[in-house]
Length: 248
Image (cartoon, rainbow, N blue to C red; front, side):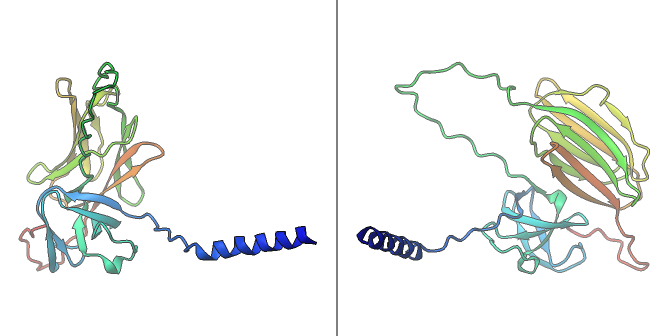
């Protein structure tokens, strides 16, 4: 009888302790932390012809999500609720980049065994393949396969010979036959690459057809380590629209 009573008291005490523990709040992970490549305006909508809600300075950090038609909805980095209505506004995806890694804090070597310095290219990037694909929807893709995760620097150049430039640092090697790839797409003419063995920097240039407007999206497929540049033709402006170039 006493044993049964002790068991009941133990169970009640255990339940009471559980009630005293506050419920754990789990924050759902969402969005991507990105930084502005240079000074850029935050627009009210996904268009250069809409109201400017604010400005990001070069290197300023935001949380980005809801990528559509080459535009990110941007939020304060500490924003916890994934709701597009809470966004600060919209910024073109090409104007944002993954933040640079923080330098490692130097550690004291006092009392520690000093090990040989590792080869700086031991964690280098290998560009395994570059593939061009045309989809039935009209969208064209350039797929770059790496040996591990990598966030390249990407920017566009306008003019008579428009092109998209992708810079990749710390490249040790690249697959054969990647110097020049003939695409023959409606939007993409060809893909050119060059690897500087001295600086271990690789540049990929996507030559575009002139006199066309483009929307460019970026996607990284982590499972396959494939970085995709997705290009689609931008909707044509209605007749009578101001042809002047808007500030991003």
